[in-house]
Image (cartoon, rainbow, N blue to C red):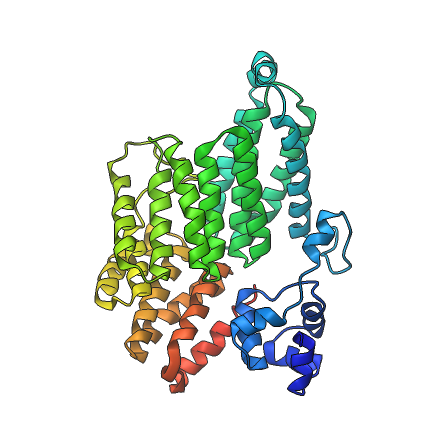
Length: 418
C-alpha cells in the first residue's frame, strides 16, 4: 500500500488531507506521485494524519523522480519556473560543477606556469566578494534576502570559470567551494534540505579538486547538519569522522578541527552518549588557545564565542536540565540584541530554555522564552528558528492543555513552512 492507498483507507480525499496539513491539494498529489518529498516539518503532521509512524511513512512514500530527472537533463513540470531564485541557483551549481571538474583536470605545471590571470587579481577579487557576502548573510535579519546576490555571484563566477582555461583554476575552485557553502546555508535556513545537501556536496567535490582540506572538512560539517536536522545522528557522526580526518590534514592555525569537534558533540548528544559529547566539547574548547586569524568570517566562523549556548543545547539533548539552564542563561546574556547579535542565535537559546521548561512541565517558563523566540522567527523569517520551535512543540505533551501553550503551538505551526 502506498501513500494514496493509505489516504483512501482512512477515507480522505486529497483536498481533505491537504486541508488538515495546511498545504495545497497539488502538494499532496506530488507526494503521492513521487515528484517531491514532504519536508521534515511536514512529515510529522502527515504521519499523524495517516495514523502511522515516521518509519512506516517512509515505506509509504514513493521514490522521488525529481533527482533522476535532473540527472538526465529532463525538465519536470513541477520544477519552479525559470525566474525562480532556487531553480536558478540549482542550475548555476550544475554549470559550475561541470566547468570546475574540467579545470581541475588541467596539469598542475601548466596551471602554475601560466600566471597571467593571477596577476590580474581576479581570484582574490572573488574571495573578497565572497567574504563580503558572508558578512551580509550573517547580519541579515531575513537570510532569504541574500538569495539574489548569491545567485549573481554564482553567475559571475561561472563565467570566470568558463573563460579561464589556465592559470587561475585552483584559486577559482576555492572561491567556488566557498560560495557553494554560502548558498547551502541560505537554502538550509529556508528549510530547503535537498538544495542545501546538494550545495554542500558540490562544495566538498570542488574542495577536493582544489586540494583545500579545511574547505572540504567544513563542507562535510555542514552536510552533517542536514542529517541532524532530520535526527539521523548516526549518519551525521559518520560524516563527521571523515571531516575530522580531513581537518587533521588542514591548517592547524585554523579552527576547523575545533568546529568539527563542536558539531560532533551535537551528534553524540543525539545518540545519548554523554561521555563522547563532553570529550568533543572539551576538544572544541581548544579554540580559545588559537591565535588571531583562526577564522575567516566566511565558511569558517567558529571562534568559541558560542560555546556556552552549544554546551547548553547539548545538555538539553541529554536531559541534564540543571547544567543546561546554567549554560543557557550565560549564553542568553551574551546574545542580547542590543549588542548586535543575530535573531537566529538568540532565538535558538530562547527555544532551548523553553524546552527546559517543557521538560520540567513548567508552562510559565515555556511561555516566557518561547513567546520571544516566536517573535524573532516572525521578524526574521528564519526557517532555523522555526525548526527549533517545532521541535519544542514535540516536548509540550500535557502542557498543551493550557490554553496559552495551545495558542502558542498554533502560532508556531504557522512558521513551519517558510
